[in-house]
Length: 120
Image 1 (cartoon, one colour):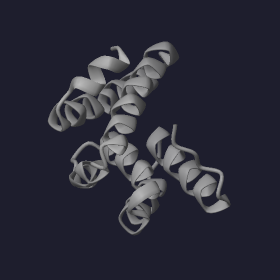
Image 2: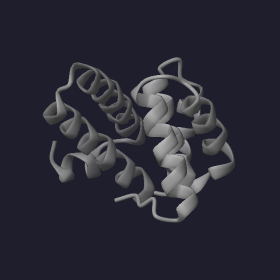
Image 3: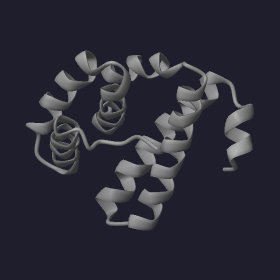
Image 4: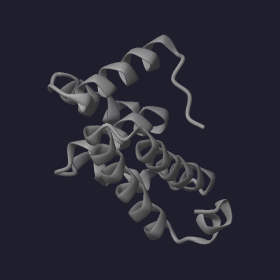
């Protein structure tokens, strides 16, 4: 997907692509497919950057309640940038879970607390 496509998209489309990217990333990582996981992460990042440039990051907050743990994990990590009081508790809960999401949540919290978590 081109940057221009993200710029022309509605907030609803960006949110849809964010969710799709999170699901794709989770599937790819579980299958050990790093190439697909990286493409999905690029999709998530591009959607997030565009939402942030529009001042619409609050559109991600409902995703903190998603039934899909991977979607919750991505949304909570991004929420650390604009609503840490909402993202941190979600990541704390996920960090206690076994598997890749738990590990990712633990790492996100660690780097955030160190002040080195950066959002492209």
